[in-house]
Image 1: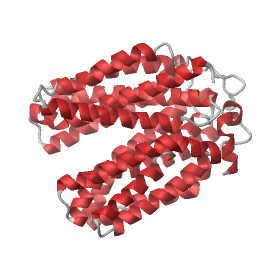
Image 2 (image 1 turned 180 degrees about the vertical axis):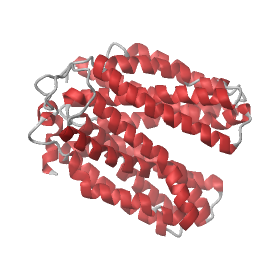
Image 3 (image 1 turned 90 degrees about the vertical axis):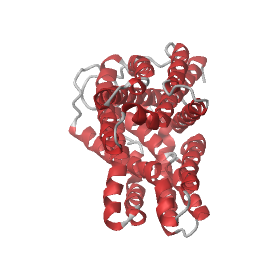
Image 4 (image 1 turned 45 degrees about the horizontal axis):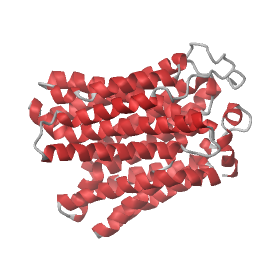
Amino acid sequence: MTRPLWHARAAVFATFFAVGLGMGAWLVSIPAVQAATHVSHGVLGGLLLLLGLGGVLGMQLSGALSQRFGSRVVTIVFLLLFAGVVNLPLHAGGAVTLGLALLAFGLANGAVDVAMNEQAVLVERRYSRPVMSAFHALWSVGAAIGALAGSLIQQAQLAPAWTPVVATVGTLLALGFIAPRLIGAAAPTAAATDGQSADSPSTALPAATRRRVIGFGALAFLLMLAEGVANDWSALHAVEHLEVPRATAGLAYAVFAVSMTVGRLVVDRIAGRFGPAFVVRYGSALAAVGIVVVMISPLFAVTAVGWCLFGLGLAGVVPQLFTAAGNISPARQSIIMSRVVGAGYVGQLAGPAIIGAVAGLIGLNLSFIFPLVFCLLAVVIAGIVTPRRDGAEDAASPVLDPASRS
């Protein structure tokens, strides 16, 4: 491993951490934002859709810009923008200004999300082993620290607007290290197996490539929807299904989040030994077991074990999916990443709404059949992430060769 490659890996680690820091600061600030803007729960829920809309738009914009200018430039520009707009919701005076602030925040977050994941693919492509899951673990660590910093600021009775300032300062300090160390654009030529030149401005994908991208996007949608279920419904499920106190119920999500972070720190070694298809297949199977345990558990302690299995199972599947998607066609890597990451993001946003609608009909516990089915579908189609032996993936990504064993 050369020093520039080590520096590039550290820069991508810092980028994921900074974005997680900002998101954690925002999430813990939501009650303060609602109080300051005097909006109802219903209005706030509607405005949060603008955050998701901005994210989807930002992801597609990032893909197009990265295709033309490279993900290094896009990461730097939108990370700088992210550092600024994370403060906007805390300065909103009403529903209209809050909606505009959330739209801008979502756009910056979505754009940097795609660009930094593409940088992660570029770093991993130069490594001799998988490293993608560890990058996502650093996002989780950053989010936890951002949320903790926000909680401490609120306990100290400081103005809520100071919470995102922590993320802004941290991101700006990190940018000085990140900017010169990210991997610059290197247009593949021979690897452009889709029949178009690597530097073509066209974002159109050939039919064969498009079919694979659709498959990857569908898998990302299903798996991130399942992840979103734990994020938004784990605590409420413990309250409704097991009648535990709300303070205790919050531990359900905490167990899931910690398990996912720990899993992402170790799953790269498993992927390096057995390949990405192994991680997706058996990780999804473990997640399916976990959600079944949650559904049939009569005790909160057993439910916590279920969420732990669910988090450990899902920990590595999405990072491996992003890696494989980034290597479908290096000539169109930016566009493909924006499509697949965007599909996953939509799934994560849609999950709470879908589960909520189904829960209104059959109950929250039975509604978890949906993430169970999605995990089982992932087990069946996990082989899609195995690199093709006849195309650009092999030439561009030797780190994924072990996948052929799965």
